[in-house]
Image: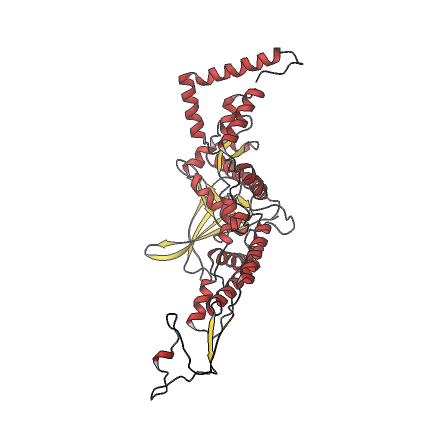
Length: 444
C-alpha cells in the first residue's frame, strides 16, 4: 500500500519542487536548447499552496462557554506547534492529507507531524473512520554511523520500532515495542477537503498539473521566439564580398551593430525581415494563469494576471479576495476538526480524561482577512456602544491579537482600572438610551 501511494505522492512532490519538465528535448539538442528548456520552468504550484496556508494559524483552543484556553493548549505550546502547524497544513493542501502522531511523553505528550510521503495510515472505512486501524511511519535516520530507514508501526495498543537498510528490499530488523495505552491508533488526520465522499480528499496540486505543463510549454515557445526571431534581421543583395586567399570574407563586410554596409553596385538592395510578435505567447501564458487562478480560487493579483487591479481600498481588496476567503473558511472547518481531534488525544495521553471526552471545545483561528485597522476599530467600537457588548469580549476580534496580548491587556486594565471605567461608561450610555422616548432620535 505504501509503495503504491508513494508513486502518486512523489509525482506531486516533484511538481511542488519544480523538477518536472515535460518539454520535449531531442537527443541532438544543443546546450543552448537545453538552457532554454531549463529557463522555461515557471512553477506556480507552491504559490497555490502558500496562498491558502498563510491564512491558517490556530491561535487557541477553548472549551464551550469558556474564555480561557483548555489545558491541552499547554501541550500544543510545549510541542512548538505554533510554528510546526504550518507544515501539517501545507502537506494536507499539497497532497490532500497529512498526519501526526501523539504519544505519551515526559513531561508532556509528544506530537510529531508527518506528510503522507512519510506515513501511511490504513482505515477500515477511509472516508468516515476517525482513527486508523494501524499506521506505518518511515523516516531516514542513523543506527550508529550507518544511515538506515527507521520504521514505526502503530496500532491501538502498541508502538513497534524497526530498522531497514533500504526502503524496497531486505527484512526489517525489530528494535523494540512499547505499549501506549491510548485505546486508539494515535494518528489524527488532516484532510484538505471533505467534498468527495466517493474517492476521498484531493490536494491543490494534482488538478493543476496539466496546466502547469501547459504554462511551461508556452514559456518555452516564448523564449525560443524571443531568442531566435524577436530581433530584426537585415539582408543585402547584389554585393560582391571580397575574400582572402582562404575564402574568408574580408573584414569590412562582417555584420555588427556598430558597422554600416555600403554598396557601389547599382543592382544592390538592402532590406530586413520582420521580427516575431511575442504578444501571442504572452497572452497565451496570461490565459493559462487566469485558468489556474479560477480553479484554485486565487485572487487575480496573486498571479499577476489582472492589469486593472491597483490602488484598491481595503473594502475592494476584500471583495477581490472573497473567493479565497471562502476556500480558507472551508479549510479552517476541516483542519479545525483535526486539530481538536489531536488535542483531545493529547489530553488522553496526559491523563486528562475530561479533556479527552470534551467534544465541544473549539479551535480559535487568527483573523487574516484583508481589512484596514480603522475599519475594524470603528466596527468594534460601534458593537461596544450600540450593542452593549463588553469591550473585553471584543479584544480577541482585533486582527493579529494573540492570547498573550489579551492577558497582558487584562492585567493593565485591572491595575489602572481602565476596563472597569470603560464598562461603566458603556452601561451608562445604554441606560440613558433606554430612558429616551422612542420617537426622539438618540443623541450623536
